[in-house]
Length: 343
Ligand code: TYM
Image 1 (cartoon, helix red, strand yellow):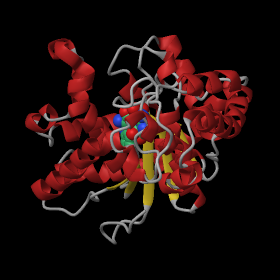
Image 2 (cartoon, helix red, strand yellow):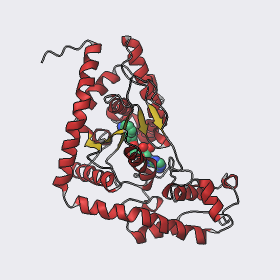
Image 3 (cartoon, protein in one colour):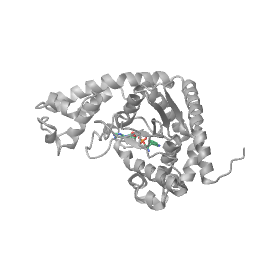
């Protein structure tokens, strides 16, 4: 984590994950694991379950409730402590939607048109996508700037959204002649920032991939994890002597990255250990490591999910703490814009 961009803002970390489907290994290595590391550094950390983002595409209400609780359980099981980090779901803090509206009036249509995630998600039928999906990045900027967050840990796929967040902050500051919103720094570090599909090393591992074999879910049991790694697509060459030898081998490179991220080491160190070994050796070692790291999380998630009311209580308490930070920032924003608050 680099120094805060402007010294007037104290270091504060914010990030979020959508409660859709199950948490997968990419979310864990690219995001949740990093969230825990930042919490352990003692910085102020705020982690959100972005349910308002989830509904930009259709969500069955029952599934949304389940996924929200499951993601909260995943956060806690992976090591986030609701005392030390603020954990809450976005819709319980109204400032997110309120600030997003102001940012809808700051951001330009041309900026939104350049967002690659919108193009990917809307596909060929963009005319039929929800207006919310189009404005998604504006709500994301609001999530971050509502807390004057200085650092945002994410996977590589969120980079463009974070650049847009900086553009929105800069335009707001410029338009109103203030130095009010910080230019937030993305924190995209380590070997797990872009975990790829186990079936195709050129595609990102994703919660929404129709093939369950393409990803490891945090809820998968040990046998399933081992089977998915055993069946993961690879080539027939042994692992090379140096990282350069993985250049045109996306599937092999992906498995090496996953191993490094799980073992808290670098891809170079993994290659040094396994150089010359075939996948018959490497895959079982990877599966064992993954099971050792992920099974305790899955167990703890199951235990937490047995008490949904307890999870809801944690979310409610987190929302209160989040709102206490957000409300003065929202009030000041309204004032800057010229919106009267007389109550
Ligand atoms: P979402 O829910 O798609 O993903 C959550 C986090 O997981 C990371 N991630 C990955 N990292 C590595 N490899 C992968 N295959 C992989 N797949 C997902 C994502 O980069 C992300 O960090 N727009 C965000 C949610 C959001 C948000 C925010 C994030 C809303 N508001 C404010 C940060 C700050 C999203 O869709 O993440």
